Image (cartoon, rainbow, N blue to C red):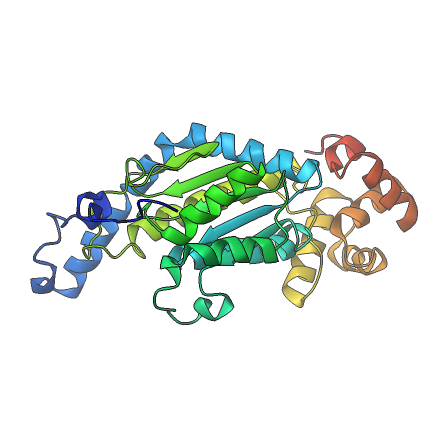
Length: 305
């Protein structure tokens, strides 16, 4: 990477002093809480402004998965941790392969629980980490950097672009401090942080919102949801067994206990159990129907009020 001197960081919105909180240390607890809450309420409107770019990113993600490729979140510090969190939550929520969404964080997994000083300033590490993840042309790389000036993330985006992978970029400033070529730029202008430069606050909240949108809408477009129910849920604990049984009860004429029994018979797959019940078929037949319709439950059972 060339020209990686960031002397202009002081001009970033996220590095400015917030005029509303410049005397925050003089306030009482409730006043501080109200101030933080007031600032947080501005975030949704800023995210709303980049919905077209988020839509573009979702389309890239859906296309990647439909063509047997993957999505990689790449970040450092808070941004990296948020990417790892979102990727980790996809498999249990949507019965999706752990391969589909993957998080890569500067400094490796140790950086999830403690700060790894200087990790974000090692651009060569990003290339190494993507190679270790076996990044291929067609995989989508989503860089996450509130400041828009993280060497590790910029290097990852540049490498991905050079090998022909589609790229997207989530930043929390009006425009990137360092130009980088990407297919979709989601520039959320969150403004000055409550504590100057602490991007774990408003920037972190905005980033989490956008990541939720990208992954959730991608899963919806891939048939992982019926209505607003998580029908592709795979039972791995008692909480999910209860939720799955209630979903089955809601969509069929079975009572709760019978729904729970059918869920067990279906191997813990809510979607399979529903098809077994409504189409009066075996587990194998239900699985064949689901595969035939690319996982879209509505194509099999139609509309249920």
